[in-house]
Amino acid sequence: MCAEKLKETKEKNLIDWYNDVLLRSEMVDFSEVKGFAVYRPYGYAMWEITQTYLDAKFKSIGTQNTYFPLLIPEKLLTKEKNHVEGFAPEVAWVTMGGDRRLDERLAIRPTSETIMYDSYSKWVKSYRDLPLLLNQWNTMVRWETKETRFLLRGRENLWHEAHGAFSSKEDAGKNALAALDFYKSYVQDILAVPVIVGMKSETEKFAGAYRTYTVEAVLPNNFTSQAATSHDLGQNFSKAFDIKFLDENNSWQYVYQTSWGTSMRAIGVMVLVHGDNNGLILPPKIAPVQVVVIPILKGGKTDKEIKDYAQKILDKLSSLGVRVKLDDRETFSAGWKFNEYDMKGVPIKIDVGERELSSKTLFIRTRFNAEKYSIDLKDIDKVTSKLDEIQKNMFLKAKKDMESRITIEKDRDKFVSSLKDAKAVLKVAWCGEKECETGIKDSTGATSRVRPLDKEVLISEKCVFCGKKANFNTFFAQSY
Image (tube, rainbow, N blue to C red; front, top):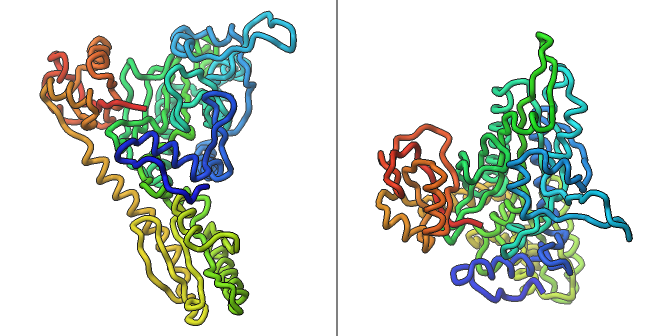
């Protein structure tokens, strides 16, 4: 039952706490297929809110929704060398159709570049066909060999993937950065999670990309997690798939491409950042239920009047655009319901009993900061401003926490020991060379997470790890 207490504390065992919260809040459940989750209605509703928000953003720049097959012929997957090498260890294959062995293996979609770009090569013939921007809301399968975790790392993931084709390098670059801004606004404005935005290293970038941009969140254990990515693919795929067009001068040119996506991982990050030892704490903008109205019933003659009053409150809040629920179940006590909705992270609970009925008031309890106070029914519109206030303050609190976990480091020994023990997220001067990053990973288990986009004054003239000339500042951390 979701009202029962959690088995672990967030401070003692973050991941066990996290799994317990997701299960008890009824966001997800296990399935009979290892690494494949069931998304229950409460969790899936958060994905629907995500879709509604981001879909409007995508369409604002001309992106259209589409759908391509789940299965990808092996000959297509292997067309771009770096791409297939990056995904080969995680590809799940279909080899049988009924009781017959297939002539060619079919990959279960790890990502759709290859199957989509086969069609792009047929559809793009002239500069008049560009730009071409298509998006899919779908799932992808990557056969993770590491320990799987709900939302953060599963073998099947709910996500979207958008793919653009452009006539110029500049237009593709602008599109990749526009997508990055969409993700930044989604994670910060909807999930109330502060992020570090920037570029991935050569080692960490998407397989086959020219450049990868990332939205990175800092977690309570000083790990980081990639909440979304946007890739400038250059012409790597267009040359492999022969996607070219006749320009205004009647000359053949290869297109420049982008791909970008986010998944349920961002919602998992939100749970990790905001939750506490009583369960979820949901920012109002992502909460499937923003307000729950709970009649306090005692089996007396006023119960019907209290229920009617509670219904009136629900109707008024609904008319204000609030996602509100009335829980008038008589099989559970009010205390049990309070615990249940705390576990589910509902931002505001409203008690309605005999006192509220007679005084025409509402008794409000907030999940974030645990405020308790009464307001008059005539001031019910203040509930919407309280939701806005909660959203803002959740972000500010998380931002302060994120900043407290980031340390600027110049000393090599401290850099290695801090990363190894996940004492902090470290911002350092770095050379950016692959060999250096391999050495850091071997020594600490950590990787480069993000390089700031804006030009910054170098923390040091020398790379913190290898001592060579530093080229830019970069954040390093353990990661999920």
